[in-house]
Length: 111
Image 1 (cartoon, rainbow, N blue to C red):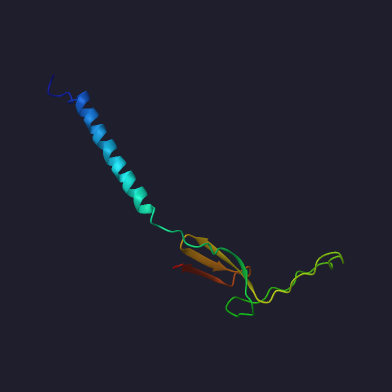
Image 2: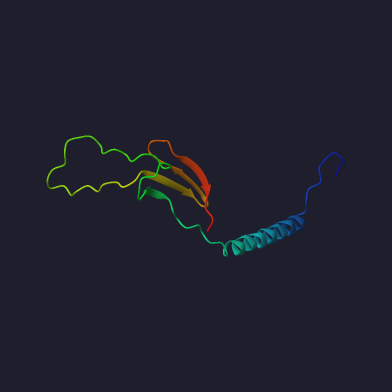
């Protein structure tokens, strides 16, 4: 073998390397799975909400939609007591918005 050719790894040495690498991956996998079993998911609070009363912080109550009156066979439509707003959630991160775009906020949920 001349000095300018690279040295190649032997097959047994390469096999030992891959066995050690597989053992390390298995140990890390078991550690990660075991540490995740103690975690609890945040409660789901996402959705559309309507405030029970008028609240200036949440905006104005939306006026009824214009249009022809409903037929007499339609059920009575509920009166909205307060402004509507939307809560979006991704894990512990929560954002609040309303249809008018006048409300917005980013929060962090702690349980």
